[in-house]
Length: 164
Length: 186
Image 1 (spheres, each protein chain N blue to C red):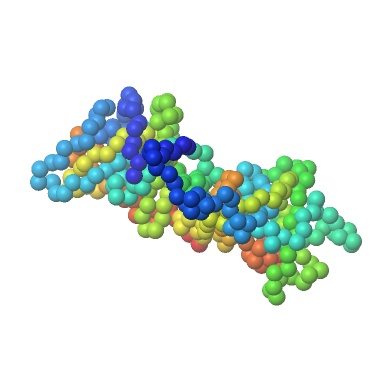
Image 2 (tube, helix red, strand yellow):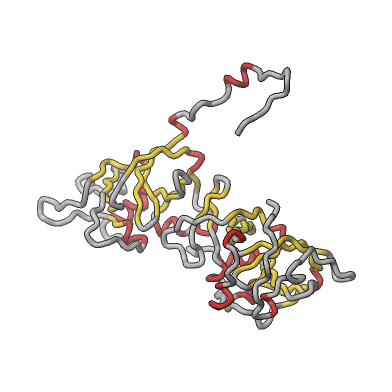
Protein backbone atom coordinates (compact mmCIF):
# COMPACT_ATOMS: atom_id res chain seq x y z
CA UNK A 1 0.00 0.00 0.00
CA UNK A 2 1.33 3.43 -0.81
CA UNK A 3 0.53 6.64 0.93
CA UNK A 4 0.63 10.16 -0.34
CA UNK A 5 1.82 13.27 1.40
CA UNK A 6 0.63 16.72 0.42
CA UNK A 7 3.21 19.02 -1.15
CA UNK A 8 5.13 20.91 1.44
CA UNK A 9 4.06 18.60 4.24
CA UNK A 10 6.62 16.57 6.15
CA UNK A 11 6.20 13.89 8.78
CA UNK A 12 7.58 14.80 12.20
CA UNK A 13 10.79 12.97 13.02
CA UNK A 14 9.47 11.55 16.31
CA UNK A 15 6.52 9.84 14.58
CA UNK A 16 8.90 7.99 12.25
CA UNK A 17 11.00 6.87 15.19
CA UNK A 18 7.89 5.46 16.90
CA UNK A 19 7.06 3.09 14.05
CA UNK A 20 7.83 -0.47 15.21
CA UNK A 21 10.09 -2.34 12.84
CA UNK A 22 9.39 -5.77 14.32
CA UNK A 23 7.59 -7.14 17.29
CA UNK A 24 9.51 -7.85 20.44
CA UNK A 25 10.08 -11.51 21.26
CA UNK A 26 7.93 -11.36 24.39
CA UNK A 27 4.92 -10.56 22.24
CA UNK A 28 5.03 -14.03 20.69
CA UNK A 29 4.72 -17.53 22.00
CA UNK A 30 6.53 -20.49 20.52
CA UNK A 31 4.34 -23.40 19.53
CA UNK A 32 5.41 -26.96 18.80
CA UNK A 33 2.97 -27.63 15.97
CA UNK A 34 1.79 -30.73 14.17
CA UNK A 35 -1.15 -31.74 11.98
CA UNK A 36 -3.52 -34.67 11.86
CA UNK A 37 -6.26 -35.12 9.28
CA UNK A 38 -6.20 -31.48 8.26
CA UNK A 39 -6.30 -30.27 11.86
CA UNK A 40 -3.46 -28.05 13.00
CA UNK A 41 -2.60 -28.15 16.68
CA UNK A 42 0.26 -27.71 19.05
CA UNK A 43 1.66 -27.18 22.51
CA UNK A 44 3.40 -24.15 23.87
CA UNK A 45 7.14 -24.81 23.77
CA UNK A 46 7.59 -24.29 27.51
CA UNK A 47 5.18 -27.21 28.10
CA UNK A 48 7.28 -29.62 26.06
CA UNK A 49 10.27 -31.37 27.59
CA UNK A 50 11.24 -33.25 24.48
CA UNK A 51 10.34 -34.44 20.99
CA UNK A 52 10.76 -38.12 20.21
CA UNK A 53 10.91 -39.69 16.77
CA UNK A 54 8.37 -42.35 17.61
CA UNK A 55 6.88 -44.22 20.53
CA UNK A 56 9.66 -46.59 21.55
CA UNK A 57 9.24 -49.58 23.87
CA UNK A 58 10.33 -49.32 27.48
CA UNK A 59 13.13 -51.58 28.81
CA UNK A 60 10.47 -54.10 29.79
CA UNK A 61 9.38 -54.31 26.15
CA UNK A 62 6.06 -52.55 26.60
CA UNK A 63 5.09 -49.33 24.90
CA UNK A 64 4.85 -46.42 27.31
CA UNK A 65 1.40 -44.94 27.83
CA UNK A 66 0.70 -42.01 25.55
CA UNK A 67 -2.26 -39.82 24.75
CA UNK A 68 -3.10 -40.30 21.10
CA UNK A 69 -4.53 -37.04 19.74
CA UNK A 70 -5.89 -38.86 16.67
CA UNK A 71 -7.83 -41.24 18.89
CA UNK A 72 -8.96 -38.44 21.18
CA UNK A 73 -10.29 -36.40 18.26
CA UNK A 74 -11.53 -39.29 16.13
CA UNK A 75 -9.08 -38.64 13.30
CA UNK A 76 -8.17 -41.53 11.02
CA UNK A 77 -4.45 -42.12 10.49
CA UNK A 78 -3.12 -44.39 7.76
CA UNK A 79 -1.58 -47.65 8.96
CA UNK A 80 2.19 -47.57 9.16
CA UNK A 81 2.37 -43.81 9.63
CA UNK A 82 5.26 -42.94 11.90
CA UNK A 83 4.01 -40.63 14.60
CA UNK A 84 6.11 -38.18 16.55
CA UNK A 85 5.86 -37.99 20.31
CA UNK A 86 5.89 -34.88 22.50
CA UNK A 87 7.04 -35.44 26.06
CA UNK A 88 5.39 -32.98 28.39
CA UNK A 89 7.30 -31.04 30.99
CA UNK A 90 6.47 -31.81 34.60
CA UNK A 91 3.81 -29.33 35.59
CA UNK A 92 3.08 -29.63 39.25
CA UNK A 93 2.08 -31.88 42.05
CA UNK A 94 -1.00 -33.32 40.36
CA UNK A 95 1.05 -34.75 37.50
CA UNK A 96 2.34 -38.30 37.21
CA UNK A 97 5.80 -38.94 38.69
CA UNK A 98 8.78 -37.70 36.73
CA UNK A 99 9.78 -41.21 35.75
CA UNK A 100 6.41 -41.59 34.00
CA UNK A 101 6.27 -38.46 31.84
CA UNK A 102 3.13 -37.70 29.90
CA UNK A 103 3.65 -38.49 26.24
CA UNK A 104 1.45 -37.14 23.48
CA UNK A 105 1.25 -38.91 20.14
CA UNK A 106 0.94 -36.31 17.37
CA UNK A 107 1.32 -36.27 13.58
CA UNK A 108 4.19 -37.42 11.41
CA UNK A 109 5.96 -34.08 11.46
CA UNK A 110 6.59 -31.41 14.04
CA UNK A 111 7.75 -27.84 13.70
CA UNK A 112 8.25 -24.94 16.04
CA UNK A 113 6.82 -21.59 15.05
CA UNK A 114 6.32 -18.24 16.73
CA UNK A 115 2.74 -17.05 17.07
CA UNK A 116 2.04 -13.43 18.05
CA UNK A 117 0.21 -13.31 21.36
CA UNK A 118 -2.50 -11.13 19.92
CA UNK A 119 -3.35 -13.96 17.53
CA UNK A 120 -4.05 -16.39 20.36
CA UNK A 121 -7.62 -16.36 21.66
CA UNK A 122 -10.11 -18.42 23.58
CA UNK A 123 -12.56 -20.71 21.82
CA UNK A 124 -15.59 -18.89 20.37
CA UNK A 125 -18.66 -19.04 22.63
CA UNK A 126 -20.57 -21.29 20.23
CA UNK A 127 -18.03 -24.10 20.62
CA UNK A 128 -16.51 -23.24 24.01
CA UNK A 129 -17.48 -26.56 25.70
CA UNK A 130 -15.39 -28.43 23.15
CA UNK A 131 -12.27 -27.10 24.86
CA UNK A 132 -12.48 -29.48 27.80
CA UNK A 133 -13.60 -32.41 25.66
CA UNK A 134 -10.80 -31.98 23.11
CA UNK A 135 -8.17 -30.85 25.70
CA UNK A 136 -7.87 -27.48 23.98
CA UNK A 137 -6.80 -24.35 25.82
CA UNK A 138 -6.99 -21.76 23.06
CA UNK A 139 -6.86 -21.04 19.34
CA UNK A 140 -4.04 -19.55 17.31
CA UNK A 141 -4.70 -17.91 13.99
CA UNK A 142 -1.36 -18.00 12.18
CA UNK A 143 0.04 -19.39 10.00
CA UNK A 144 -3.37 -21.07 9.86
CA UNK A 145 -6.08 -21.65 12.44
CA UNK A 146 -4.96 -24.24 14.95
CA UNK A 147 -5.62 -25.44 18.45
CA UNK A 148 -3.32 -25.00 21.40
CA UNK A 149 -3.53 -28.07 23.60
CA UNK A 150 -3.88 -27.69 27.35
CA UNK A 151 -1.01 -29.59 29.05
CA UNK A 152 -2.91 -29.68 32.33
CA UNK A 153 -5.94 -31.34 30.76
CA UNK A 154 -3.67 -33.76 28.89
CA UNK A 155 -1.84 -34.66 32.08
CA UNK A 156 -5.17 -35.19 33.81
CA UNK A 157 -6.23 -37.53 31.04
CA UNK A 158 -2.97 -39.45 31.46
CA UNK A 159 -3.32 -39.83 35.22
CA UNK A 160 -3.88 -43.39 36.48
CA UNK A 161 -7.52 -44.33 36.19
CA UNK A 162 -8.37 -41.47 33.84
CA UNK A 163 -10.33 -42.27 30.72
CA UNK A 164 -8.46 -41.36 27.52
CA UNK B 1 -21.89 -4.07 7.82
CA UNK B 2 -20.38 -4.44 4.36
CA UNK B 3 -22.37 -3.56 1.29
CA UNK B 4 -23.38 -6.47 -0.85
CA UNK B 5 -22.43 -6.06 -4.46
CA UNK B 6 -23.61 -9.40 -5.78
CA UNK B 7 -25.13 -9.03 -9.22
CA UNK B 8 -28.66 -10.34 -9.69
CA UNK B 9 -28.53 -13.73 -11.38
CA UNK B 10 -31.43 -15.61 -12.85
CA UNK B 11 -33.66 -16.84 -10.05
CA UNK B 12 -33.43 -20.44 -8.94
CA UNK B 13 -36.21 -22.73 -10.02
CA UNK B 14 -38.79 -22.55 -7.25
CA UNK B 15 -40.07 -25.78 -5.78
CA UNK B 16 -42.30 -24.39 -3.07
CA UNK B 17 -43.64 -21.10 -1.82
CA UNK B 18 -40.62 -20.30 0.31
CA UNK B 19 -38.17 -20.97 -2.51
CA UNK B 20 -39.33 -17.82 -4.31
CA UNK B 21 -37.12 -14.78 -3.88
CA UNK B 22 -39.03 -11.94 -2.29
CA UNK B 23 -40.35 -9.48 -4.82
CA UNK B 24 -39.53 -11.63 -7.84
CA UNK B 25 -36.33 -12.08 -9.78
CA UNK B 26 -35.31 -8.43 -9.88
CA UNK B 27 -36.26 -7.54 -6.36
CA UNK B 28 -35.82 -4.06 -4.99
CA UNK B 29 -36.55 -3.07 -1.39
CA UNK B 30 -40.21 -3.82 -0.80
CA UNK B 31 -42.42 -0.91 0.19
CA UNK B 32 -43.83 -0.90 3.69
CA UNK B 33 -47.50 -1.75 3.98
CA UNK B 34 -49.55 1.05 5.50
CA UNK B 35 -50.87 0.22 8.96
CA UNK B 36 -48.81 -2.96 9.28
CA UNK B 37 -46.61 -1.72 12.11
CA UNK B 38 -42.99 -0.61 12.16
CA UNK B 39 -40.72 -1.57 9.32
CA UNK B 40 -37.95 -4.10 9.95
CA UNK B 41 -34.90 -4.21 7.66
CA UNK B 42 -34.17 -7.77 6.63
CA UNK B 43 -31.20 -9.22 4.76
CA UNK B 44 -32.35 -11.74 2.18
CA UNK B 45 -30.13 -14.71 1.44
CA UNK B 46 -30.39 -18.03 -0.31
CA UNK B 47 -29.31 -21.45 0.86
CA UNK B 48 -29.70 -24.03 -1.86
CA UNK B 49 -33.12 -23.21 -3.28
CA UNK B 50 -34.45 -21.77 -0.05
CA UNK B 51 -34.78 -18.02 0.43
CA UNK B 52 -34.44 -16.84 4.02
CA UNK B 53 -34.15 -13.51 5.76
CA UNK B 54 -32.34 -12.34 8.89
CA UNK B 55 -32.95 -9.07 10.72
CA UNK B 56 -30.20 -6.65 9.78
CA UNK B 57 -29.61 -5.83 13.46
CA UNK B 58 -27.91 -9.24 13.78
CA UNK B 59 -25.78 -8.96 10.63
CA UNK B 60 -22.19 -7.91 11.23
CA UNK B 61 -20.69 -8.49 7.85
CA UNK B 62 -21.00 -10.23 4.50
CA UNK B 63 -17.71 -11.85 3.57
CA UNK B 64 -16.43 -13.89 0.62
CA UNK B 65 -16.56 -17.63 1.05
CA UNK B 66 -13.38 -19.20 2.42
CA UNK B 67 -12.48 -22.76 3.29
CA UNK B 68 -12.96 -23.33 7.04
CA UNK B 69 -10.46 -25.01 9.33
CA UNK B 70 -12.12 -28.07 10.91
CA UNK B 71 -12.74 -28.19 14.66
CA UNK B 72 -12.04 -31.40 16.60
CA UNK B 73 -15.12 -33.10 18.03
CA UNK B 74 -17.44 -30.47 16.54
CA UNK B 75 -20.97 -31.57 15.58
CA UNK B 76 -21.77 -31.82 11.84
CA UNK B 77 -23.58 -28.48 11.76
CA UNK B 78 -20.31 -26.69 12.65
CA UNK B 79 -17.99 -27.37 9.69
CA UNK B 80 -15.12 -25.28 10.99
CA UNK B 81 -13.65 -21.91 11.86
CA UNK B 82 -12.70 -18.99 9.66
CA UNK B 83 -10.32 -16.16 10.42
CA UNK B 84 -12.50 -13.09 10.13
CA UNK B 85 -10.51 -9.92 10.63
CA UNK B 86 -8.26 -11.49 13.23
CA UNK B 87 -10.99 -13.34 15.09
CA UNK B 88 -11.91 -17.01 14.87
CA UNK B 89 -15.54 -17.30 13.82
CA UNK B 90 -17.31 -20.68 13.73
CA UNK B 91 -19.44 -21.51 10.71
CA UNK B 92 -22.99 -22.78 11.15
CA UNK B 93 -24.25 -24.92 8.27
CA UNK B 94 -27.99 -24.32 8.16
CA UNK B 95 -28.51 -27.10 5.63
CA UNK B 96 -27.45 -29.59 8.28
CA UNK B 97 -28.76 -27.83 11.36
CA UNK B 98 -32.23 -27.17 9.96
CA UNK B 99 -32.44 -30.58 8.32
CA UNK B 100 -33.16 -29.24 4.84
CA UNK B 101 -34.24 -31.81 2.32
CA UNK B 102 -31.56 -32.85 -0.13
CA UNK B 103 -33.22 -31.40 -3.23
CA UNK B 104 -33.67 -28.05 -1.48
CA UNK B 105 -30.23 -27.97 0.11
CA UNK B 106 -28.37 -28.67 -3.12
CA UNK B 107 -29.74 -25.64 -4.89
CA UNK B 108 -29.05 -24.65 -8.45
CA UNK B 109 -25.85 -24.56 -10.44
CA UNK B 110 -25.32 -20.84 -10.09
CA UNK B 111 -21.84 -19.39 -10.33
CA UNK B 112 -19.94 -20.16 -7.13
CA UNK B 113 -18.76 -16.57 -7.06
CA UNK B 114 -22.16 -15.64 -5.63
CA UNK B 115 -21.40 -17.59 -2.47
CA UNK B 116 -20.91 -15.61 0.70
CA UNK B 117 -20.58 -15.99 4.45
CA UNK B 118 -22.98 -13.85 6.44
CA UNK B 119 -21.55 -13.15 9.90
CA UNK B 120 -24.29 -12.93 12.52
CA UNK B 121 -24.13 -12.05 16.20
CA UNK B 122 -26.58 -12.59 19.04
CA UNK B 123 -26.53 -13.75 22.66
CA UNK B 124 -22.80 -13.05 22.91
CA UNK B 125 -21.99 -15.36 20.02
CA UNK B 126 -20.74 -14.76 16.48
CA UNK B 127 -21.25 -17.24 13.68
CA UNK B 128 -20.78 -17.31 9.94
CA UNK B 129 -23.62 -18.66 7.83
CA UNK B 130 -22.44 -20.03 4.47
CA UNK B 131 -25.00 -19.17 1.83
CA UNK B 132 -25.24 -19.41 -1.93
CA UNK B 133 -26.33 -15.85 -2.56
CA UNK B 134 -27.04 -12.64 -0.68
CA UNK B 135 -29.78 -10.66 -2.32
CA UNK B 136 -29.66 -7.45 -0.34
CA UNK B 137 -31.85 -5.73 2.21
CA UNK B 138 -35.60 -5.28 2.13
CA UNK B 139 -37.84 -3.40 4.52
CA UNK B 140 -40.72 -5.46 5.78
CA UNK B 141 -43.60 -4.59 8.10
CA UNK B 142 -43.15 -6.37 11.42
CA UNK B 143 -46.90 -6.57 11.95
CA UNK B 144 -47.20 -9.15 9.22
CA UNK B 145 -45.03 -11.82 10.81
CA UNK B 146 -46.91 -15.09 11.13
CA UNK B 147 -46.03 -18.47 12.61
CA UNK B 148 -44.62 -20.83 10.05
CA UNK B 149 -46.61 -23.83 8.90
CA UNK B 150 -45.80 -26.55 6.46
CA UNK B 151 -42.29 -25.52 5.52
CA UNK B 152 -39.41 -27.62 4.33
CA UNK B 153 -36.79 -28.75 6.78
CA UNK B 154 -37.43 -30.63 9.96
CA UNK B 155 -36.31 -27.81 12.25
CA UNK B 156 -36.94 -24.76 10.07
CA UNK B 157 -40.36 -24.13 11.60
CA UNK B 158 -38.77 -23.99 15.04
CA UNK B 159 -36.49 -21.05 14.24
CA UNK B 160 -38.41 -18.92 11.77
CA UNK B 161 -41.53 -16.91 11.22
CA UNK B 162 -43.14 -16.02 7.91
CA UNK B 163 -43.06 -12.53 6.50
CA UNK B 164 -46.15 -11.97 4.36
CA UNK B 165 -45.71 -8.28 3.57
CA UNK B 166 -43.71 -8.86 0.41
CA UNK B 167 -45.02 -10.29 -2.82
CA UNK B 168 -44.14 -13.79 -1.76
CA UNK B 169 -43.65 -15.73 1.45
CA UNK B 170 -40.32 -15.18 3.14
CA UNK B 171 -39.02 -17.07 6.16
CA UNK B 172 -37.39 -14.85 8.76
CA UNK B 173 -34.89 -16.55 11.06
CA UNK B 174 -35.01 -15.98 14.82
CA UNK B 175 -31.25 -15.45 15.15
CA UNK B 176 -30.87 -15.47 18.98
CA UNK B 177 -32.93 -18.64 19.27
CA UNK B 178 -31.04 -20.23 16.40
CA UNK B 179 -27.62 -19.55 17.93
CA UNK B 180 -28.62 -20.70 21.40
CA UNK B 181 -29.86 -23.96 19.92
CA UNK B 182 -26.78 -24.42 17.75
CA UNK B 183 -24.35 -23.86 20.63
CA UNK B 184 -22.37 -26.92 21.62
CA UNK B 185 -23.54 -28.25 24.96
CA UNK B 186 -21.12 -29.22 27.69
